[in-house]
Image (cartoon, rainbow, N blue to C red; front, side):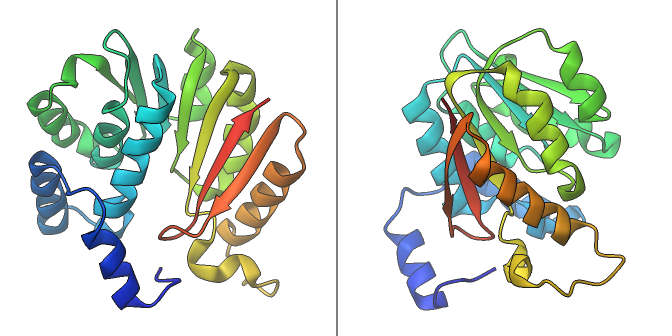
Length: 214
């Protein structure tokens, strides 16, 4: 996941905003107790998400893929005081873990958890969103885009994580049982060519795309 020299990566983190104390605790406990801690957004990307959210000032945020709640808390930092963040995950075992940290933050009353399949839940959310973060099963990225684009306000932002997939998006000879890589290659192509959005792909950690609805 390091696309720049590790020393430069460390320099970048050192000269970016500090990781808030609550998120440091969440980071530590995720690594101590939860499987696949690599899925955590982490300090630097978390500060990027926070900054983007603060620049957008969203009234409604949708997050697809909660994991332990780190990215939700980062995105919530830019929420309008009367805004809401809806976050969706299919892992019921993490629900209480997420809620514990949400409630320790000042945004707990604004964060609404949904458990289940995002493709079933999103159509039931009769809302228009200003900011969407996609960080769930890669095979469905294109489906998520198609289902949320009409729920996104003009000028709204879609953030898509892991779009470089450890560099595997350059591999055209992926294994037959590798469904994620071709799905991400197709998703990146869709974002580049869809005239409803303008897109820039940033080589941050495992790749982060910013798409703005026209």
